[in-house]
Amino acid sequence: MKVFLTGASSGIGVALARAYAASAAPGSLTLGLFARRQEALLEVAGEIATAYGQKVVTYIGDVRVPADLQHAGAEFLSRFGAPDIVIANAGVSRGTLTEYAEDLPAFAAVFETNVLGMVHTFQPFLAAMRAAGGGTLVGIASVAGFRGLPGSGAYSASKAAAISYLESLRVEERAQGIKVVTLCPGYIATPLTAKNPYKMPFLLQPDDAAARMLRVIAAGRKFAVVPWQMAIVGRLLRCLPRWIYDRVLAGKKRKPRVP
Image (cartoon, rainbow, N blue to C red; front, side, top):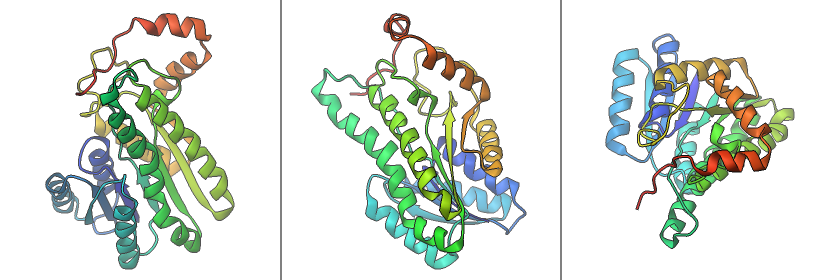
């Protein structure tokens, strides 16, 4: 099996890489790991190669830069052929408020990473996967994309956009034999959630979340919330009339802005 994964140097990305390495027989898996932080990525790759006996190749780059992923994709394809699974996992979360001009770059960075980064991840592989007759594209969205969360306008909007983009892509690729899986995590104990000043129901550890995600991907499900309990929370939030939603959320603690 061949898996290409972005955002592989921390959080969910590391947990997914480990989960795939542990689930396959030694030497039967090729992992292409892509991330910005070279030192952290090389450490993860070395650990996985040593502990699980899998082939791991690394690519340093930024998902916001199409050329970085085109280069990585071309190199992976030339060495290993079309991947079986491509996971667009790289993402950022920042507290943002529209009233502050200094937050405008943060809005741009969040959208470029969480939405365009997903497009940049999939694009280099689509032609080869179509020629190979199939494969699976996985996008990591979020329950935060179900409704707009105050103080997280950039993050919520970017994840809502990611959900819609993945749905469009799923329909486009159906006739090509390529599956598209939308994964919406709830709260996962990663650096992205470490500074949240509010309660996080059904918080999962990364390894637990990754194991659940692998089962969803293997089953070829179109859409899944992890953990399933957060799907209930998400549905309830979606059903709330706007006047109730506004009143309930207005006074809640918000993700802190990062200067």
